Image (cartoon, rainbow, N blue to C red; front, side, top):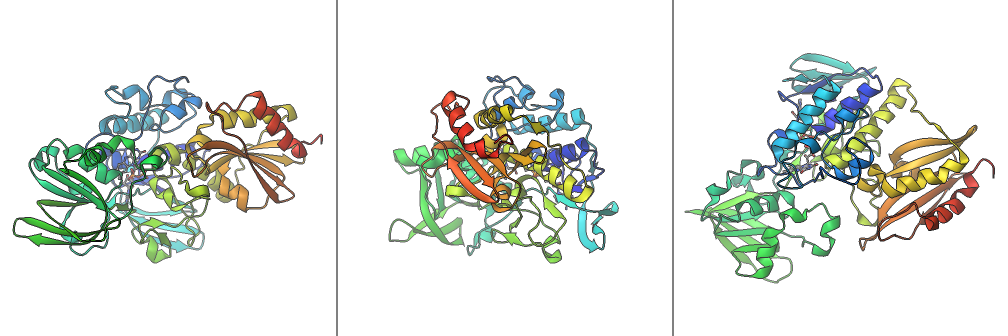
Length: 483
Ligand SMILES: Cc1cc2nc3c(=O)[nH]c(=O)nc-3n(C[C@H](O)[C@H](O)[C@H](O)COP(=O)(O)OP(=O)(O)OC[C@H]3O[C@@H](n4cnc5c(N)ncnc54)[C@H](O)[C@@H]3O)c2cc1C
């Protein structure tokens, strides 16, 4: 069973269909697209797609340039979003994104039961039963692709009286208004950016500072940084504060907000017309916590294994944005792209491979790799595998040594390779150091002893050159059957 027809549910269904695994997809919506049928509120995405790129559309290489389309084997179902963009920006509009997902469903002939609400869950001996508005569905495993779009408010006294991101109106409605936005992540900056031409005063506040030097590597997108630019240049019609919000109080003509800056020893009070909580979202988990599903992030996100299974309830899996509940190794602090389409489209493919093997006895193809093809394969992956480049330090490419030679084990979570025992093998990954340096890594597992070899970074990330060929050849030598 798959619940949800946003990009996470659709990608999962496509990959199940591709392996011939019988399943049903139900969705409370009446058309595909999930969150993108309504959000982002100001109608432009943050993730980019380049309609023209050095790689041809419809190829795996092109996925590096298209962070919004779902993936498929059939050329016509690849890059659905790219062909629809009007190119006013390098990011699609919300409508183009929704349309791209609709095209994907049409071109892959996915079948979704729309208008069906999942209402309850129970465990029976041979699996799970999902109670829905369309009756009961029995399954061996359920993949919940529920999104992370239910409004969540930080526990700040009085914030419950404020509006939330989801209530934001058209920019003109904030004309000549004083607006206080609680939060400094993408949704907060999106609102601030949208109302910049209208509002009289805008204040954004949250305790943690924005690390501008790390912007290119953080989840916060430079696309929304114009309010920060106004803050830096002065005048203070727009302020971006590092401050803990103590309380929000209703006043005769609006709100009074009391804050304590984290970098200044005083108290500030703001009298404003509007307060907007941009403090985030949660997964609509329904009765899953009652079934025993453990959560992280103040109960907002389900806690997951590296294969996106609930850590506490076997057979309950997650796809889409909610896969951020599987943190991975977080080496050097780098987070994965599990919360955006570009990252979770690959998680879904890996999840389905895992489900197929574990619950349906379908082993993935593990083709033979000839000895002299091993190093070129690994270097090619380090050079431009979209899975490794987009999911840095999170997904890796593995080649095992089996009885009959070397076998390509495909793409898997790096955490699995590092933490689980297995046959002698090599894995390669792209990683990022704390200072932002992007570099390739080789991991060797020999008799379950794991060694990690970080390689030098190349300015153009050209990892197919002779210097890397020599280095990797030396590292993998103990794995070669002829050795
Ligand atoms: C403001 C905002 C902006 C974002 N911008 C981007 C962006 O630019 N690029 C990007 O890649 N990501 C962006 N994201 C992240 C975004 O949430 C995901 O990329 C994407 O929408 C997640 O897909 P999903 O399939 O996990 O969930 P969703 O798209 O949220 O879909 C959830 C599905 O679950 C169904 N569902 C939920 N509960 C039930 C139930 N009880 N019964 C039946 N069906 C149910 C819903 O009907 C829906 O079909 C943004 C998120 C937010 C909040």
